[in-house]
Structure formats: structure tokens, C-alpha cells
Image 1 (cartoon, rainbow, N blue to C red):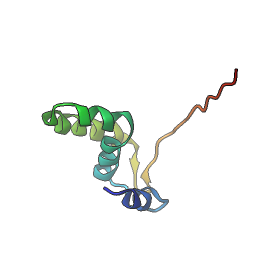
Image 2: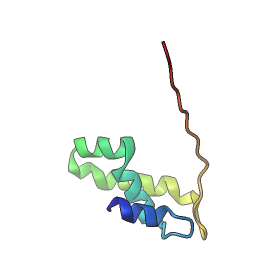
Image 3: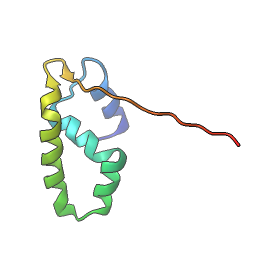
Image 4: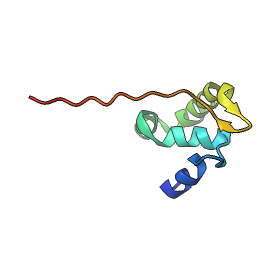
Amino acid sequence: MAFTDHRTTLAVGGDLSIERAAEFLLEMGPTGRALREADPALRPVVAAAVRDAIAPFHTPGGLRMDGAAWLVTGRA
């Protein structure tokens, strides 16, 4: 999925089905990196686990999950 497609999918009112959300999570961040370095046979197992984990958060309005981020900077 290209970044333009991700933008459309993630927009308010976008088409964020469980399948598309799982695919996004499998491509991006630490999960994507781990899967790129892992045995390809592992991908379907992880994909099923990701779909199961996000299924309770899927609503008619899309995928709704709480989120948080820490931004840490330092200076000597």
C-alpha cells in the first residue's frame, strides 16, 4: 500500500476495514520491521493475531483506539 493510499484510508470517514488496518500495522513501525527480517511463513500468523487484537476496536465509524505518544528531547 502506498503512502497516498494510507492517507486516504486513515482520513476521517476513510475506508479503514480490519483487513486494511491490519495491513497498515504489518507494514509500518516495529511490526513491519520485524516481519521484513523474519521468515515469510510467519506473516500470516502475525496478520491473524493483529486482526484478532484490533477487532474489538472496529466500529461502524472505523477503527477507534486510544493512543498516546511521548516526545522526549534532551540537551546537555
